[in-house]
Image (cartoon, rainbow, N blue to C red):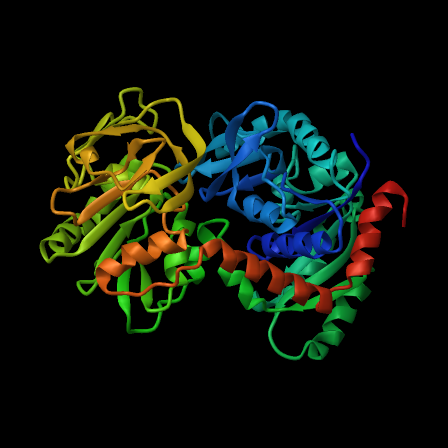
Length: 496
């Protein structure tokens, strides 16, 4: 294994900000001229992205967080940056993606036994990522304090110790109890794991950080870990793609006024960061509609996002009464766009002859598009360059199981290598596409939203993500002891 400087950010719990901090540090150190690479041994998310499988010419899947961390490093993403990706399919089971390719599915208890066999592949990926790097910034998952999951761990201390990567522990003061969470983590870890932690930092502080000086001293007194900084609440983080559905729980309902776009939130929602360009658009209100709420009658556009379990989510859509709301919306002249799984739901039928999603082999669709989908075992995973019918360039990616055909495919939304992509109803009110990133292109978004009388910002949304990364990196340079962090990373190779 190439011996390069490396450090791992682990958290006292989920959603403490590890992904954003690693992305910010990637941008910060890349700006200093270092060859930086991100790495997350194990991720759980249905917000996936497409990345290259080196040496094959093929594409695979990684977590969205590692995709934008690679963007922060100004390098192309690789499947080895996130060798194990778990994509939840039910309350207790997930699809396993190993080094970019689907490996199978497992229930939670079964996965706890399986993951021990993945450590070798994780270390192999870490070595590949390290080959052309000066610094590897690794990210844990959940928390090392989940000692009930410590056996065969590959996500936190199991990886850290196997690869000899020192750890910095991140606590989230915004949720309260940060002293107890940091000190409590120290208390429950076994001694060998505890020794891997070389310092801590406090994230998401609002107000004057000097007010927390005694808190910092208390954590050091109980743990002997030095503080590496107290970081402010980084509002720019809200402009980065969400890594998983936890982010949906934080999204506040936007203020009134402007064109209303409604997005129904189902249990297996996937790749909902497709909506980020719309959320950032001035003059638009994107409302995520929760179970128990009605689709708002004043919505001009309803977007059905992707799903990891299309047939199950389609059944939930009906149980919630949203099918009636959606048909009423179209009768009033409202528009609908379905993305990936949402596209499949809009058709007449979904067939699953091989039982890929479960025991239900056939489901009646919403009937708003004259198409039919057959789910197939081979997953389509690829970057896609498309052209709108008006000639505008579109860049996106595809991750889906299934082939969709029917008369409405004669009215595509775009062309990929001259072939039709997507479908549109005869009245032009309902459309669907497999293209993720559909709204990213500023010129296309402007053309699309012009149908509703909105003069949209023509900038590509990628520029907003880049600006947010720069802003976060600058904040970290001011509030974090960056030199101490680098010394800890270099201690792995005996240079500090």
